[in-house]
Length: 509
Image (cartoon, rainbow, N blue to C red; front, side):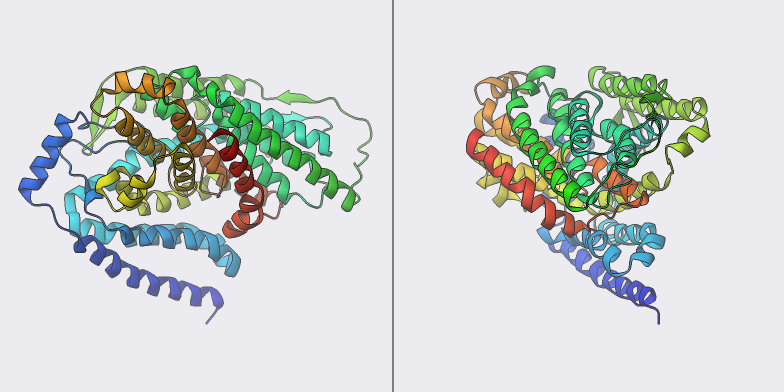
């Protein structure tokens, strides 16, 4: 039997083992009686959380909080999904390349089947909720940015010397706060890779690109990263995030200096010689009309957070009309970019659909299998993560706990969990309209810790932030050898990011 077939059999057996364990974990907790369900629904309505919160907040109208019932080991399918992403490309690369979509669906099923079998309609609702309210907007935004940025081509002579590379990463870090980490990363990753096509060691370049452009750079405005946008929706003023500029500048400065010296060392070690391409051609952008579409994407995202047009019930999931309007606008902008941009330009830009397809297939498995983890997190002190929530008291606690959870879970609901934890700890009983301004001023260091933790730690793993995996995929497709899931963490995050975050902790928290 071939190695790939053996591995497929092992995965299948693991799945049959995981399903009954997950079923037992769901069944092990107390079940909701009809009376409990009604009371849970009434409590949700009375507390003002009966509707849907943007970017994964809240429970649906009339649905109980399952996070109060689930045990911690309900997260086993999510762990298996992450282990598949981490290990299979190493031990069975060809099998993984051809079947990653099926593997993602397989692990999603190991969660969905027992979840629905035990909690029936409530489980179906949670699955539909994460698909319609989280996954669909996530993929539409990524697809629109990927499509539009793929129509912008930088022509001319640009060669990746240490100075040039550092300049490109610095530019992306600046742009990320104003056009989003995904937008900046998708705009610059291809020119960055082409500029360094003559270099032998490119892995560390892409990793530091992910650190800075795809994560840390998005710290200065709510447009930069979803957690900050979520804070904006909950009353944090638009320019408050400039209060974390010192943190962002310190982290960016440290990482840029490290990058410059690393690049200079590798440049000399490999004896790199900038190739002579004849006459140097001036740099110029082609397909610049796509910047109009990029501006439209940023405007559509901002619009969805400002307008309040009511809600639409879709398959039992309540979503704001402006969110659907945003998603439709993004699709239209992507289609317009495809229509306006000659395909020959995209071919010259080495554009292909594989990176977005890979992200779409893998993240549907990630989103579905992490449902129990998010429900446990949202349950706060009433869930299995209560021990963790109770231990978070000091600013550095908020920074590290928010950060480490954001590195592997969706950083938006993680941000919201500890945002609400801080509000409850310091201003219990006050409405959000009164407590958030106090948190921004009197307890600013706590909000700074939550914000920086959610944004900075997104760089710790490939799945910590939306553009990370896509940048990795584009780089790998261009021929750059990228580290494995664990290799990225062990060789780069633990070596460069974590010590930097320790410095931030000592100075600011």
